[in-house]
Amino acid sequence: MNTLGIDKAPSETRVVVAMSGGVDSSAAAALLAGEGYDVVGVTLQLYDHGQAVAKPGSCCAGQDIHDARRVAAALRIPHYVLDYEARFRTSVIDDFAESYLRGETPIPCVRCNETVKFDDLLRTARELGADALATGHYVRRGMGPDGAELLRAADESRDQSYFLFATTRRQLEFLRFPLGDLAKERVRELARRFHLSVAAKPDSQDICFVPEGDYAGVVEKLRPEARRPGDVVDLEGRVLGRHRGIVHFTIGQRRGLGVSASEPLYVVRLEPATARVVVGPRRALLRDHVNLRGVNWLGPGEPPARRLRVSVKLRSAMAAVPATVACAGAAAEVMLDEPFAAVAAGQACVFYDGESLLGGGWIMGEEADTKAAE
Image (cartoon, rainbow, N blue to C red):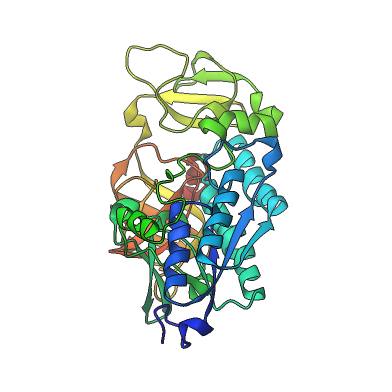
């Protein structure tokens, strides 16, 4: 059994590495090549670089493809650039725009992992005769009584498990995460040790196809109807002002509302049907009950029909908080021990048991919660 848990010698084990051109995926490829695995690097072209949709330095931009090619050459491994532009446009970019039009706050990185990387690319890796697909994600893979499990990264500050909640058990059997036990600085040290040209390359911060963080601008370009103006109203429906499109707002937003009041106001609800932005005091943001759709269960056994004690993340950067979850098919109901502010439709709610990721689903809006209660 080799270090990837595959019953072959490393030299007989082919591993496709998803190489984005950043230091993490480059270090993952270097580690595996250094251990003697038959490594094949694959980089995805996800959008038309000639249109300058993304800014230089963002994930999978033109420079990143060049960087990945240079790293592969230095490691003396085969490298392929695959055109996934059409699939990425349909599964990620269009979904991103439609989600904003529905008054949601999408997470395109989850959609990309769920569809393009862990579905299409995984299939391509199998076609290349690979025994595994490796990525530079900071997350660990363990083995439990029901097979492969997804665990938080050893470096909690770099943990990316939240973004991988939609990974299926079948996909997880084929996936490997060489960096899961390492801290970021250790990864950069390895990149320097292997003399990789990207050792000092900054991490990408923005969504790859969103230049300078201008989400609204991208959505308006893709869906001109997103410019539909409407009213900014209080909780009683009184008009406080006007806005130039709900895509400019997210739940919990305080700045840029364009209205004045005697107390701070926050975006409490978005109503795409009427193009209304509902604002109110911070206490109006608190929710202790969340309904989910599209639930994926990775924990042991079947999804819990009765309430199971878990900890949950409602946003990627928050600390996990105690809650209970009960599932019914692809739906779930989450009850938080303490109310949480700014629960946004379109974000993910991810369940944990200690360091183990149990699953997660997509947060539904308050209107959906009301209908579910009825």
